[in-house]
Length: 150
Image (cartoon, rainbow, N blue to C red):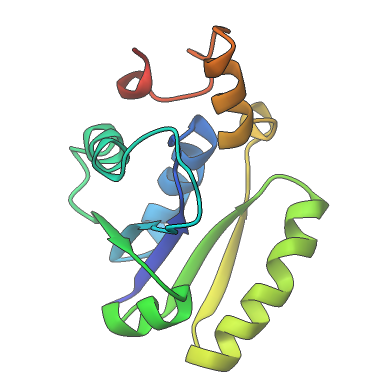
């Protein structure tokens, strides 16, 4: 079984995340959307809300599992029997950030990182931007799945 982990904070899930998830699905038998929990990071949405947003967005997709984890992503992959980590890239800055992490994950756990390039229409979207738009009462309806909209 080809199992992959798509790790992130997903605070909140965006249309950029959705793009990567949909494009990754044909590549794997199972895709675990893994919400990393970092006690030092203050999130806008609770873990329960983030899980609900993702589950509702992909409720019709049996190949997707939504879970949370703490600690190193490489160790989490070992615990889940995942051979791959999926990451989305918006630009070269993302690649420069992701490359040493991928190399370390491979060295630690022999898990391969698979990069998918975001579609141009969602390459400007990040959770940080979405949270800023939300905090300032901007229109974020074109940035997130409908389940995130209030």
